[in-house]
Image (tube, rainbow, N blue to C red; front, side):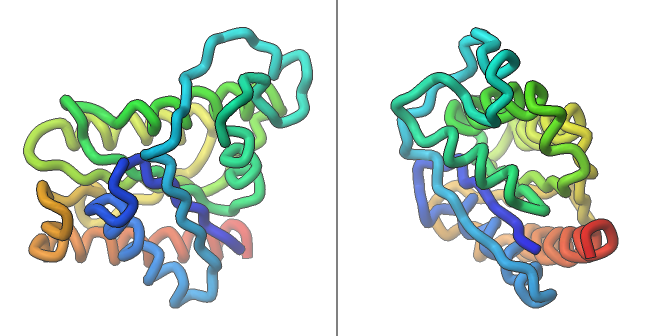
Length: 191
């Protein structure tokens, strides 16, 4: 069993990555493998609605020149998927949105290949936009027919400067519970 986490932050060791790391700690305690993929510094484009993935049905996006097909393959191979993003101007980062758009289009074109994989969102926010970002990521999981993992609060941390998550006790507890719940859900559905 494996969970892949996508960090949509341009800071590979920032608060979003640290939040995913806290979730991963709990998942690994249950014997489930984890992999973190930092997508925040990659040059990724959104879906151009060419619909060639519908014709090709090869689990790939025809847009080339970026690592998106690698990400799609990682999602296909995983039992659980975490998508994390900091909040930029009230929403998810551009790279997080590109991941959702293109992976979603390819998944739908290939017999809903993400259906029944377990999803979880992770959000780092300075102040406003956390619920909107949290909902946007969860909308993706919902339309992909993926059960969404929840916690004791919305999966977010109040953190501005790198490392501020370490001061957010409630956020840390939320992410720990998220990891426990995700591992439990994966084992119940995939074990």
